[in-house]
Image (cartoon, rainbow, N blue to C red; front, side, top):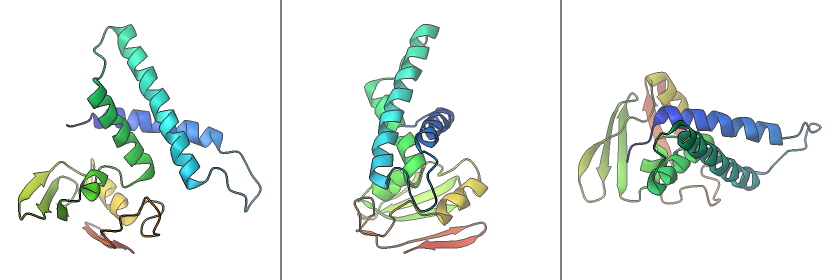
Length: 166
């Protein structure tokens, strides 16, 4: 299922504003919400943003999202905020053995069973895709629940050069 990337961006901005408002101005060396708490709060804000989106759709007489579409949208917003954005679905798929991205929109996947398939674009532009590949998500490779232990490293090549994570 394809999600509306524009809507993902709108909801991401809305949730990010809520997360930023929640982080108090603390003295240097004192953090706000920890990673797990921030993600839990982020999920709550995503749910609230989706509720507001549904109410706006009903008020405007437009169709509301199905439960499946809403779940997909929720995951896409979460991945955009806390994980590797659009490539995350491929990274989470245990059947994916290799991902080849030549820019943002020429993405090919090789599966463990030998199949090869073209995948959806991983970003809106090559510049965005190189930024995404150059910054691993929080906790990448640290052994916490968010790391991908089956894939000990990630090597990405982008138009600006290779980027690696541990």
